[in-house]
Amino acid sequence: MSVQDKVAVITGGSSGIGKAAAIELVKQGANVVINGRREQALVEAANEIDPTGTHVAYVAGDISDPQIAERLIGEALSRFGRIDTLVNNAGIFIAKPFTDFTEADFESVLSINVAGFFQVTQRALTEMLKAGSGHIVNITASGTTEQPLKAVPSVLAALTKGGLNAATKSLAIEYADKGIRVNAVAPGITKTPMHSVVETHDFLAKLHPMGRMGEAQDIVDAIVYLESAQFVTGEILHVDGGQNAGQW
Ligand SMILES: NC(=O)c1ccc[n+]([C@@H]2O[C@H](COP(=O)([O-])OP(=O)(O)OC[C@H]3O[C@@H](n4cnc5c(N)ncnc54)[C@H](OP(=O)(O)O)[C@@H]3O)[C@@H](O)[C@H]2O)c1
Image (cartoon, rainbow, N blue to C red; front, side, top):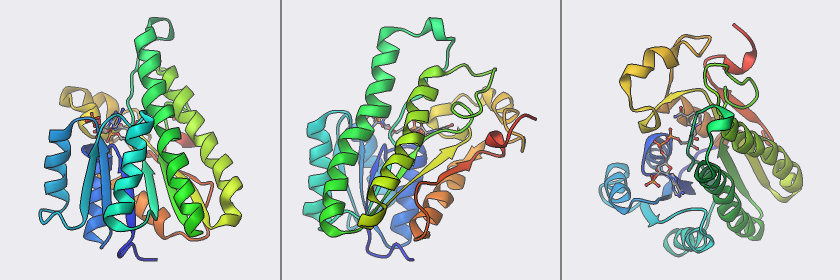
């Protein structure tokens, strides 16, 4: 199924995977509304996604803030008339030994990765229910959740992204008979501004059985596949060079 004329809301659409997804969806004929906290980054991303501004809009602000989530959904409806797809992509990652995590780390990871998901998903789903159709894709994580890596201790990623994997299945079951599909893409370590220190890339590449990091386009390809996969819901699609398959 084509994404032509579909309307997609993408949180964290100003950078990395979210921006790459927005570029691809617009290239394939969709309209997108992107979100992130930094307005200037959104302006620049929107210009990259569609220099004419016809198929892109943005809302700046913290997605864990209910008012920002409300504005994001409102912008999609007022600008493009509906919401077909929500890509829950905004997220942060902090790796450190468990006992080193601070209260601030805990607050920020829970807030962005979990509250952000909750606020925008509840509002998008309400609109999808009215329409009787929709698709939600949660960008979770692979190696830090189901096959934790000794070399990258990151329990808050496991807690939040593992929670999102579970929530994906839970929502998929809850809404399967309402025309709404819910899936997840679980990336391996992917070359985005989240991992901007190039000197770490050799080390990070070795944390995948295939011996390389992911590219943003690898993740985008999975999002586009799920968008077209009308009989797929509740799927956690690992795009991780084999990390989730087991030990190596
Ligand atoms: N790259 C990887 O190796 C990797 C691996 C597994 C999973 N993931 C997941 O993939 C997703 C995208 O990551 P990425 O690598 O593309 O990261 P990125 O390049 O750092 O992009 C993150 C995006 O999220 C936005 N964002 C962060 N906090 C936000 C908040 N509170 N409210 C609204 N927007 C917020 C950022 O914009 P602002 O900073 O302006 O807010 C930015 O647009 C994340 O959920 C991440 O956990 C990434």
